[in-house]
Image 1 (tube, rainbow, N blue to C red):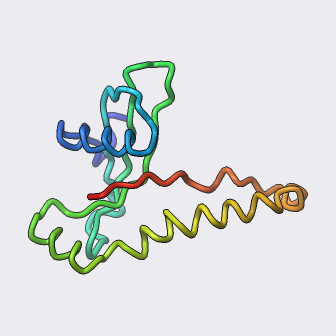
Image 2 (cartoon, rainbow, N blue to C red):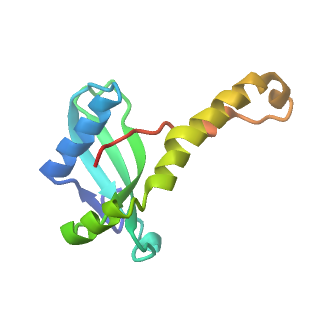
Length: 132
C-alpha cells in the first residue's frame, strides 16, 4: 500500500487531532500512526473541502485499525475561517450525525422483514464528531 499515489503519513498535529477526535467519541486506545490517503480521482474536485481517507493504527496490535472517510477544510486558514463562518459543512454534518443514525435506528425495527431481502445494516457508518 505504501506505493499508492496520494498516501502519506500524517503530521504530528494531524495525528494528535485524530487522537482527540477518537477520545471525544469514547475510543481511548493509544494511536501508533495515522496514514492519510487522498484519492487521486478526487483531487481538485472540491469547492470547499477535501475528501481523504485516514487509517488509524493503534499501538496495541490486537486492536483493529480504524478506516475513516474524512471531509476536511483546505490548509488555508483564511479560506477555512471564511467557510466556517458560512457554515458550509453544516448540512453534511447534520446528515451524518443526525439523519443517518436515525435511519439506522428506524431500520433496525424492521430488520426481520429486511433479512428476507438479504439487506445488511452494517452499511451504516459510525460518525465521529469534531469541533474543528
